Amino acid sequence: MASQQKNVWAFRFTTLSLVLIPVAVGINYVGKLFAAALKLPLWLDSIGTVLAGMLAGPWIGAISGAVNNIIFGITADPVSFWYLITSIVIGLLVGYLAMTGWIRTFPRAVVLGLIVALAAAIVSTPINVMLWEGTTGNVWGDALYTVLRDGGTPVWIASFIDELVVDLLDKVITVIISFLIFKALPQRLIGLFAGTDQVEKL
Amino acid sequence: MQNTLYVPGNSWVHRLDPVSKILLTVVGLVLTFVLPGHLLPALLLAAMLVLLGTAGVLRRVWAVFAGVALIAITFFVVQGLVYAGNATPALTLGPLTFYREGLLLGLRLTFRLYNILASTLILILTTRPSDLVESLVRRGLPSRFGYVIIAVLQIIPIMVEAAGRITDAQRSRGMETEGSLWVRMRAFIPLMGPLVTSSLIATEERALALEVRGFASNRKPTFLNDETIPSYAWPVRIAALAVLLLGIAGRVMLS
Image (cartoon, rainbow over all chains, first blue to last red; front, side):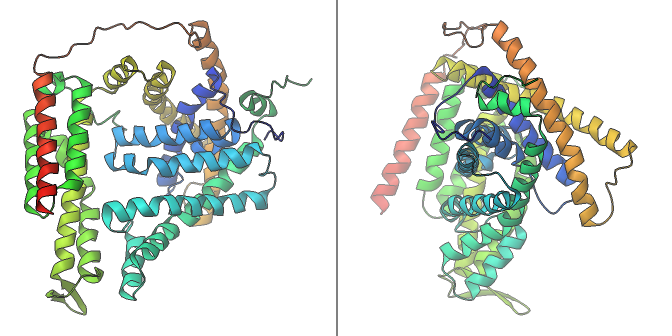
């Protein structure tokens, strides 16, 4: 991850970074496919968005997230359009922290996973409350929501917790897996996308 | 995966230009949130289904509707049990009491869910994604982003195929894909790692191929196909806007 502080937010829409976006969405899709094939109790459907952020910064990460939900809306589930903002925020956050050089170590990757889960829940909660009065459509989360509401918890807090328990483990593991894959990538590829004009060292 | 939800056809909705269909979708979505009570949302859903029926895509609509039925059921269960306005018991099953107010809210939310879906499906089921993107590029979407959307639809089947190859290769090396959760969890990285690396390496080649064909050029591109807007596009647009105004006016007058 490029550690120079300057212009983390600069737009760098090179051909290479634009071509990265479809690949990121494809990685999201295949991640979900592998998770289902291995019968994991997780979605793991945002690895591509997280990797795009780590490789090419916040804007490419955000666009990868947006395109991901648009494509998922066209191909499978039109409700996913409404959660576009959640994916954008994930890409922005990871991209920003990666480009400042903050995600260097494994413990920090875990913390990043927690941050991403928290941010995703914060952004999704107003959408859930506005559209569905707070439920998320996930059976386990909604069962918890019912118990919390029964105990007198306000709608917003119950909805936030509903979303967070569903997201927490999934997002932490998503970020950890992305981090491990990122660390294993050839240095040449990382330099290529970060646009640091690093030439291959012999 | 089946490539997209698009159902090929030649109905009047299929022939309508994408912009008019986007307008229909937006009107449907706004009305979903504007119309009060239960009867009007039910009528909206009926009207949307009639439109989808004339497009000849109802079979796909039912498939999508059935896919979210579980969400609709949770609306009834959750809100019937714990909605804040619950006062009148309607139904008792063992230790659980469902309340009338919550069940009615569940009904409203179900109409909302299906109205959102039906409105969106009018656009998605009857419009080829490449036509939609081309239409948006004509109206100012940067053509590079248009490429990105279309490229995703092409790249996903290729990557799914690669995923199958990697799975076979790792299995032949003795990777376990069944067993305890930890075993299955560990199998994820040797599957995902090679896929990510190989597809990232391929991006470099694809970027070069695009550059050679003038992808980064700032010249204004021309289009391969002419845009055809049917003669009934404007009447449809005006009718859609009229229905929208009627709905908003009705809501304002009632409240």
